[in-house]
Length: 513
Image (cartoon, rainbow, N blue to C red; front, side):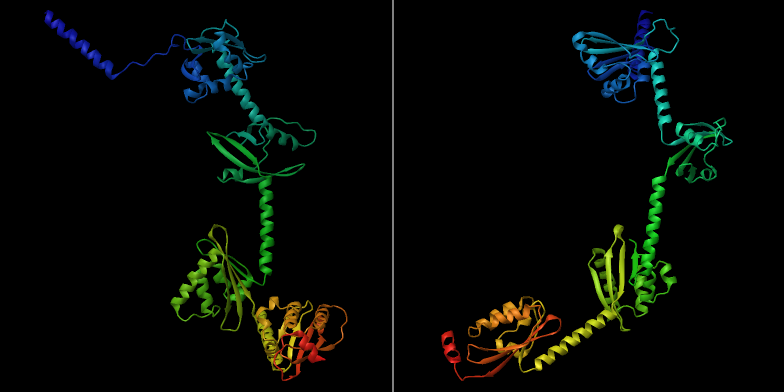
């Protein structure tokens, strides 16, 4: 019997040990005897323990940051709370009363025990019943209600609450101000509150934008309706700036559309998927594409294929090279370097420019430059004809502009002076050429007079002069004014002396004598 009793007792102990191992006991709080008291225990700024009532008041967050959250929560109730608690390790114990006006009044007791800080918050009245809510909790709730009431009353957003029948059963200060301003003269605000907005659009499920006609002018609001059971919370946010921006954008788009419609340049804008999104009437005129095709938003390849079918694109040698040209056109336009001149089979000449737009879009501009090209070709032909005519003249000729810049010279001039100034027209001025002539002729003051004559803007009369080249030839120089301030200088060789070239200027003076 003794052995049996021992075995039963041993088995019971083993079972209890196993049960305790599977279900460890929760570490009790040091504040469990007084759960209704508001008390905190800190190790530095780390929260070690707190009563249940204290954790309800403290805002949620990590225990490592509980000290800062507690100071922010009660800093407005106790004057200089942070500074006074900083002296707690030196004083050991302090007691702080709440500021005047705090309802109900509070008392904070702080103790420094073995390196730990214990904070206890009690009400100013010690005769409260045990089952009544403590003063700190009441103060926290009162402060939260007052803060929320201040937020609602000072909010610029119109807020109101509607019953199931749509009547306004609550409204904030901003709503009431506008309701009073819209009342007829001599009428006071009464219950039920007036409805400022028609909620038909709001009940449709979309966010409406409604106008409220105030005495000072119209005001626009974006309405949001949040169902809450049978009732609904409604918000009206000011949208005046958004309406002004949209109106300005609409007017700008109308101006831009009108400008595009009057442009003689064809404009085609393709989005990032290379579909036509915008075009102007000139595009249809220049490309001869039907408006129905453009309105259908074709792709870039389909757009160019349609232009090719109407012979509005230079015909390539083969279709493969045509497709490669399309790929190159798109790549170069995306980089902003595409610009070509298309000579069409019909005789027109188009300038095509491709430019990238934001978000991967592409813009193409088609300009008819047929008249410009015709004038350029005609001008080039006239210049070539004039050059051929002046080259046929036996005398050496050089024509200078009003500023003294060389405009034209003939073949005889290049042979006479052994250089062709047209190779460097930007540097061929009357000054530089006179320096060249001075180096290849005997000393004379004629070249200074030539510079003054070519650069003078006064009335000029034709004149002539002779110079002797270094090879002994005598050259007659004629200076004639032309229209627009230009100058014509011609050189004619009078004859040779049959002498070898002389490099010493003194010998030339003797020959001329």
